[in-house]
Amino acid sequence: MSPPKPSPPRSAEQPCPVARALDVIGDRWSLLIVRDAFDGVRRFSDLQRSLGMARNILADRLHKLVEAGILKTQAASDGSAYQEYVLTPRGERLFPVVVALRQWGERHLFARGERHSILVDRRTGETLAPMTPTARNGEAVAAMDTEVRKVR
Amino acid sequence: MSPPKPSPPRSAEQPCPVARALDVIGDRWSLLIVRDAFDGVRRFSDLQRSLGMARNILADRLHKLVEAGILKTQAASDGSAYQEYVLTPRGERLFPVVVALRQWGERHLFARGERHSILVDRRTGETLAPMTPTARNGEAVAAMDTEVRKVR
Image (tube, rainbow over all chains, first blue to last red; front, side, top):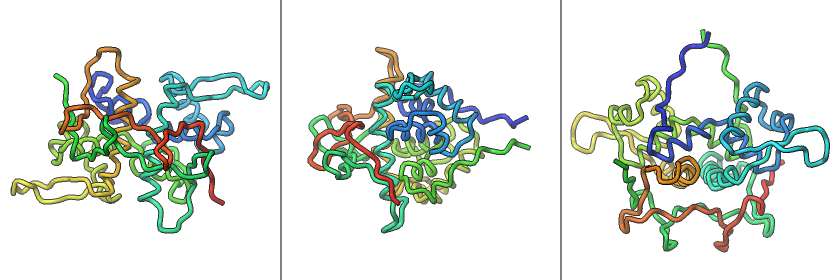
């Protein structure tokens, strides 16, 4: 028997959107699957090869992502019998999260000159601009200029 | 004995910045600690109360975040004997990740009218603009307009 897992706070009852988001996608595998989905990887076997994860864990995470409305299944685009997993609109709206993670990783987790994959605008071949939280008027907002207002 | 854990791909050898970022902060607790740090929660006991997590797990995650250069310890700002955990510049650059997670959670994980905490620009009291990946010229870039160029 496995030891009891630490029980996370039940964020479905919590008013913090960050906590709820992490309840749904806050494990490493789920976000790597989402990353691959953005990259066009659609089939179980291709995901498994790309991620190198155990089949049962991949199946579990795919099931959860479908349940959470982030992925949906569809018939294979080539008419074969395979099932494909594709992002829903809700899943596609995770793009800013994935880009922000990428940019932070690029900046902090590679040695100078160390090669890494890059995300480019395919129309220009250029990498994207750094993601910056901004005010409604378009001005950059630093963390120190913000505060969380709790409800109740 | 606990069952063997699935071994994640060793992303320290992988060229994807998203995978490396998730190696460092890709568990739910770590990002919740970072969220609290942005919110000014600095002491072990306050973090423990805020997050409702077991002391040993909190101690482990704090240790890892310090080791990863995301948090640092410093003497308490009020001159007491307490130790405080504060974000380093590297940690502060996770702000776009936390804001992107928050905005996605706000949009998709709350019922209409359900109250949730909000992040505001304290100078105006307004919430931030939606985070949008943009090209170097400032134009919004959709996921479908991008591609990952793998190295080697």
